[in-house]
Image (cartoon, rainbow, N blue to C red):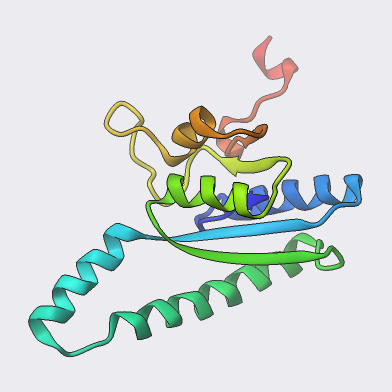
Length: 154
């Protein structure tokens, strides 16, 4: 399973997960979560203004995100794999854990940074919460600026 939030790091995560799935001759499940905070904010605004539908916004988000994911799938060259795309709504780490269980996932690939690119001293990241609660192995893909080789370390 690739946990993809469509941040700048998503391409690397998807490419890594896709290459692992190819090597293992397995299916790839791509999961994206619509954060409950955004939905709750829109629900409050919709209640006060009555000018838009939260359900319509959610459906539009899913369509746009699916289109973005399809572009990433093509860009990473993994389009030949059996791929299932799953959208969930809620608290990201909880929804990822549920998706892992419901999709019978053997391995999770995710990044440590994404849309919530706030220093960990302020808030535990979604990735950290998944690492602590996940029943299957989680592979952390580091962002390019944090990768180094043994030669770089001296």
